[in-house]
Length: 89
Image 1 (cartoon, helix red, strand yellow):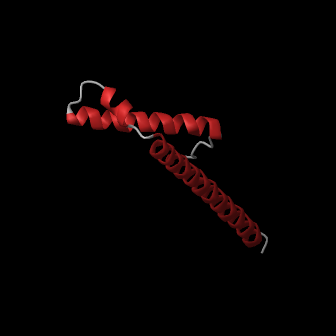
Image 2 (image 1 turned 135 degrees about the vertical axis):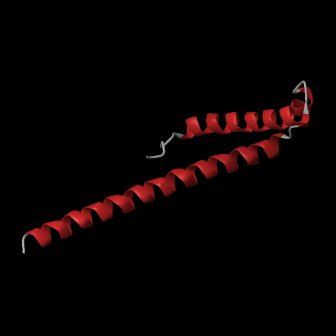
Image 3 (image 1 turned 90 degrees about the horizontal axis):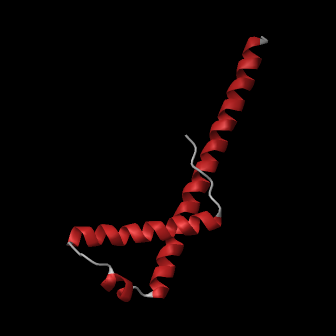
Protein backbone atom coordinates (compact mmCIF):
# COMPACT_ATOMS: atom_id res chain seq x y z
CA UNK A 1 0.00 0.00 0.00
CA UNK A 2 1.27 3.42 -0.92
CA UNK A 3 1.21 6.49 1.31
CA UNK A 4 -0.70 9.48 -0.07
CA UNK A 5 1.45 12.31 -1.36
CA UNK A 6 -0.25 15.42 0.05
CA UNK A 7 0.20 19.05 -0.94
CA UNK A 8 1.62 21.57 1.53
CA UNK A 9 -1.83 23.17 1.87
CA UNK A 10 -3.38 19.82 2.80
CA UNK A 11 -0.48 18.98 5.14
CA UNK A 12 -1.01 22.29 6.93
CA UNK A 13 -4.67 21.38 7.55
CA UNK A 14 -3.72 17.84 8.65
CA UNK A 15 -1.13 19.21 11.11
CA UNK A 16 -3.71 21.65 12.48
CA UNK A 17 -6.17 18.78 12.94
CA UNK A 18 -3.49 16.64 14.64
CA UNK A 19 -2.67 19.43 17.10
CA UNK A 20 -6.33 19.97 17.94
CA UNK A 21 -6.82 16.26 18.50
CA UNK A 22 -3.74 16.09 20.71
CA UNK A 23 -5.18 18.80 22.95
CA UNK A 24 -8.54 17.04 22.96
CA UNK A 25 -6.97 13.74 24.02
CA UNK A 26 -5.14 15.47 26.87
CA UNK A 27 -8.30 17.31 27.96
CA UNK A 28 -10.39 14.14 27.87
CA UNK A 29 -7.85 12.17 29.90
CA UNK A 30 -7.60 14.99 32.45
CA UNK A 31 -11.37 15.38 32.65
CA UNK A 32 -11.30 18.95 31.37
CA UNK A 33 -14.80 20.16 30.53
CA UNK A 34 -13.89 23.24 28.50
CA UNK A 35 -11.07 24.18 26.15
CA UNK A 36 -11.05 27.77 27.38
CA UNK A 37 -7.82 27.43 29.33
CA UNK A 38 -6.04 25.67 26.45
CA UNK A 39 -6.86 28.45 24.03
CA UNK A 40 -5.47 31.07 26.44
CA UNK A 41 -2.43 28.92 27.33
CA UNK A 42 -1.32 28.25 23.75
CA UNK A 43 1.84 30.12 22.78
CA UNK A 44 1.77 30.98 19.05
CA UNK A 45 5.52 30.52 18.50
CA UNK A 46 5.47 27.09 20.16
CA UNK A 47 2.39 26.01 18.20
CA UNK A 48 4.08 27.11 14.99
CA UNK A 49 7.16 25.00 15.84
CA UNK A 50 5.01 21.98 16.72
CA UNK A 51 2.99 22.35 13.53
CA UNK A 52 6.20 22.61 11.49
CA UNK A 53 7.50 19.47 13.21
CA UNK A 54 4.33 17.57 12.29
CA UNK A 55 4.58 18.72 8.67
CA UNK A 56 8.28 17.74 8.55
CA UNK A 57 7.34 14.30 9.89
CA UNK A 58 4.69 13.91 7.17
CA UNK A 59 7.23 14.90 4.49
CA UNK A 60 9.69 12.34 5.87
CA UNK A 61 7.03 9.60 5.74
CA UNK A 62 6.07 10.54 2.17
CA UNK A 63 9.72 10.63 1.03
CA UNK A 64 10.47 7.30 2.69
CA UNK A 65 7.47 5.76 0.93
CA UNK A 66 8.56 7.14 -2.45
CA UNK A 67 12.05 5.72 -1.97
CA UNK A 68 10.58 2.36 -0.96
CA UNK A 69 8.38 2.34 -4.08
CA UNK A 70 11.42 3.11 -6.24
CA UNK A 71 13.42 0.34 -4.56
CA UNK A 72 10.64 -2.19 -5.16
CA UNK A 73 10.26 -1.07 -8.79
CA UNK A 74 14.02 -1.46 -9.37
CA UNK A 75 13.95 -4.91 -7.79
CA UNK A 76 10.98 -5.98 -9.95
CA UNK A 77 12.63 -4.59 -13.09
CA UNK A 78 15.87 -6.43 -12.27
CA UNK A 79 13.96 -9.66 -11.57
CA UNK A 80 12.16 -9.43 -14.92
CA UNK A 81 15.47 -8.80 -16.68
CA UNK A 82 17.09 -11.82 -15.03
CA UNK A 83 14.06 -13.96 -15.80
CA UNK A 84 14.33 -12.94 -19.46
CA UNK A 85 18.03 -13.73 -19.53
CA UNK A 86 17.46 -17.15 -17.93
CA UNK A 87 14.65 -18.01 -20.34
CA UNK A 88 16.75 -17.12 -23.40
CA UNK A 89 19.59 -19.50 -22.47
